[in-house]
Image (tube, rainbow, N blue to C red; front, side, top):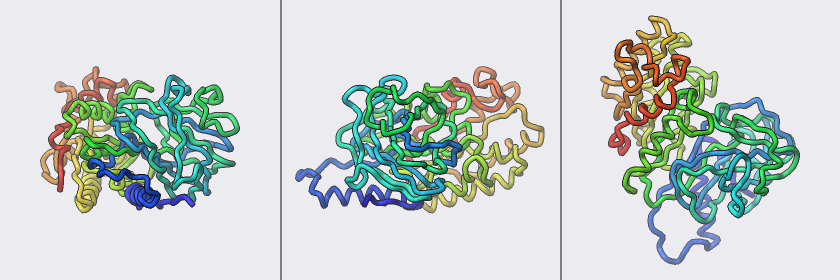
Length: 399
């Protein structure tokens, strides 16, 4: 029977089980393989969605940030209301729309089985697929669900188009004909994991809608974590890292709402990421606009710092970006929180996103070129300068 992991055990335990199974089966080479690091090639935080899926196939379209071998697919039923059976899961290179490049669609297995039943509240990691995947590549992850799924676990703001079929198992099909319905969520898919001979770990941007990419152009992968991933790929091989975007639009540090709070989801969405090395924290705007004080937000950030450090990982503090429609009280609170991030010395480094996008003549607002139009979320150009402001040397951190 395929092995299932509860959320707190997630990738590390499942990867160890899959490796042990491969050794028992005698599938490893007799020659010593070069050392590799397990890293995140793609990821998204999960939440409850309002979707209804019954005996259908979803084709999630995602974009890899780094390449590697032995691709594994991580699926989540953490927010499900019942057990869900994934009857057939395939991964192929996306051609266009819902079409897959001919000859690239391959079925993944779970402890050798083509299907897996995942209890409510649990996650599962597939066996590794032989071969390599390329960085900066669109993949189509097709998931056929047997019967009614109940509450669907997924990511509510994908900033990308995926597809849902009519009835039946269409996961193995290369043509996208059966996928007549477009969706703006990712269903069940929470991560792609690869083994890399080059990458030294995974960077985890952790935040709200600004990390989620609200304001960027849909289907173009222009969130600031995407831009950061491209910067890292341009580094020498020994300096490359995976980047896994764990932003949830509307998320808060202190209270649940759009997704559970950052304090509640830290272990699952950040610390359990494969090869997690450095976290970039950009959270607090939604808390302040919801009535929290600067001192409360700082206390929440201190809790996150302490827990990340206790796990032996580093955390970079990203300053809160300006939001021009806020009150004078909220703007003062932003300045107080940003002063803590810049000057407390409690973070392992600082990414000064506020300075990168602020209008020097009116620092409580973004420069118009960096504003998507709502005075809160950056534009494509704004996300680029945010990513460019990250000191890559600070990411190469260890504790």
